[in-house]
Length: 130
Image 1 (cartoon, one colour):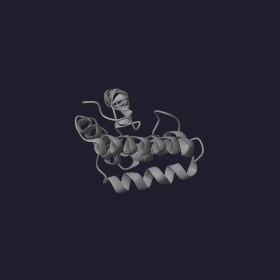
Image 2: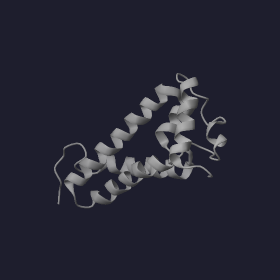
Image 3: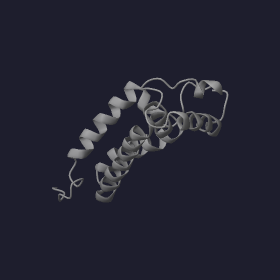
Image 4: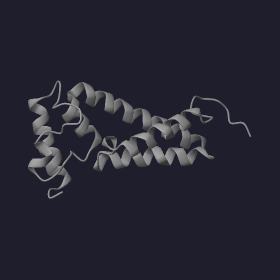
């Protein structure tokens, strides 16, 4: 893209102010990011807010918090759960500077990691069995 992330986020949030409750529609970034040379908002939360309005943004924020909590539980327990935790942390960090939720391959990978991580010992307070 031709613009910096902060420029794209600024244009996207300006567009969001005009369509705050319903957004511009899922899968439709509208013209906002394209005005500054981007095809999307380069941030999961901003992109989701732009497409679905504040209700969708709140759900995305909740998902992000859930991923962080799940990763923290896995890290706290250590062992082989660390790999799954790092995968979740990597996704959250990447979602700050891009919009991986728009990519089916990233979304499928996230779903698989969450499913495996949720079943990992220690994510619900169970004791590790050796």
